[in-house]
Image: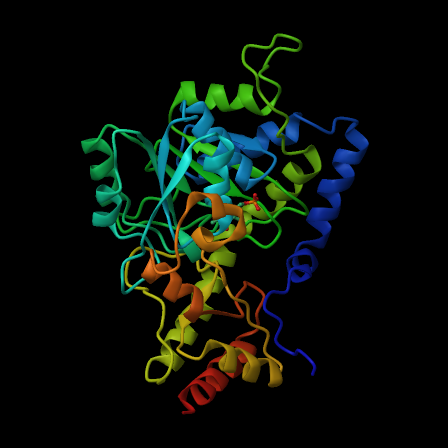
Length: 371
Ligand SMILES: *Cc1c(COP(=O)(O)O)cnc(C)c1O
């Protein structure tokens, strides 16, 4: 079996930008400064501007960006944080690593993102924050969730790992409408480094300063340690590479949107697959996720025809071994469990050729319709 449509072609981004990326890397190599230097500082300013936010503090990963945002907000042992049941496990792990407890909320029955009423119902006297995830690049209804957060005096944190450059239904770019937003620069994300990286974006001066302390041993001035921080820094090579790629983010997201529009158009009448919600805001189209009743068969048939697909994510977080001690039972979060059985991610990325996307859509239309 040969794969002729890979799920994501990562080196194509390097090929497109080779001279800029090579120059960025060799510039850092020659500079003699490999951490917390001019590239990091410049990228932080540029990324904050791209997010219409006052501050960007880079860190070692998206997971760290979430954890350090929550820690900087004072979230810790004894606290609860409301999280989506349907998400990547990193969202929950960041909460657990702060010492707090993730309290899962079901997705709305007809979509992938949290049900806003269920968010409010999950709030208890121990709740310290609401963590929303713009899963697959689709932006959550931040205005509605912010009203809930405000009503209960809670911090609102965005897991924006999959939504760099996306815009909400009010037109505001992701990262500008919450207490803090956490981004990931994992290579496969919409703005990907050549290794791990992440950032916290916020309008709050004090919060930015605390994250800055936490990422570097609790210190902004050498050997003056104000708090017990950790070591979580983006390195200069990654910062320089991200600076080379950032100017292309909007164009790359627009290419993703073109592919999504093609899929939506060609699969509109297809039986056997449910299409992702697409009428709110401007998704980053990190992933194009359909739902189908017999996912295993569809995935196997697509593989047989040379099309690679993935599942995000096959095991609901609450039923994973990592959270066995939280006592969640199978059936306790039925919508999330159903999504885990039904979701299938089609090939998606700025470098997926349109004829390949057409082929994928036509194959899905035929194969999903089979009884
Ligand atoms: C990728 C991802 C993260 C974690 O980012 P890393 O950089 O891999 O640590 C967190 N949340 C979601 C939803 C993600 O997709």
